[in-house]
Length: 125
Image: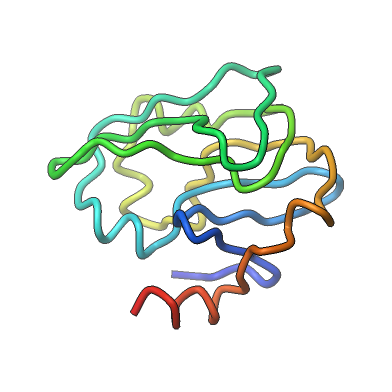
C-alpha cells in the first residue's frame, strides 16, 4: 500500500490529502482493517456542503455499519463513482480508494488537530 506524502488523518479514522485547492478524503487503512470486508457505501451528492466532524457517508461491512465523518469543512465536488458498484476496492487500497473530493472552506484552520500518518499509526496501535 502506498501512503501519499502529506496525508493527514483524523482521530475518527478518515484521511485527507490536499491537492490543488481540492482535498481527497477517504478511510484509513486501520479503519478498513477494523471494519473487515466492505460491502456497501453510501456517498453524498455533489454540491452538498459539510462542516468538519459532520457525518457525510456510511459504510457497511460484513461486521458492522459505520458513519464516516468529514475531517474538514467544504463542498463535495466529486464522488468516487467506482465505489458505489465496487465498494470492496476500499479493502484493496484504502489510500487509492478515495471517497469524495472536497473544495475546502479553510483547510489551514480545519487541518489543525489532524495527525500526520506516522503519528496517527502510533495512536491507534
